Length: 84
Image (spheres, rainbow, N blue to C red):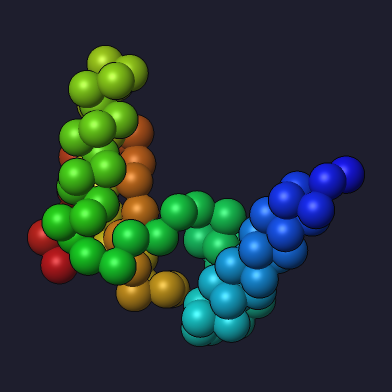
């Protein structure tokens, strides 16, 4: 494993720990699922990512507000966009 690969791996581990610390609430399946997802700080950022995914894949992608991390996630479910 090269030095660059080790550095990238350590950065990923740090990012995951940072996400775990930022997610509030009891340890549950929902919390673990939230940690695995990409979190967007703003609705606009999530909508931008959703538009990119929709344009590149042809699949409609929505956004929703996550009550666990107070961030925004993407969803493939129809009507996934929430007004929060």
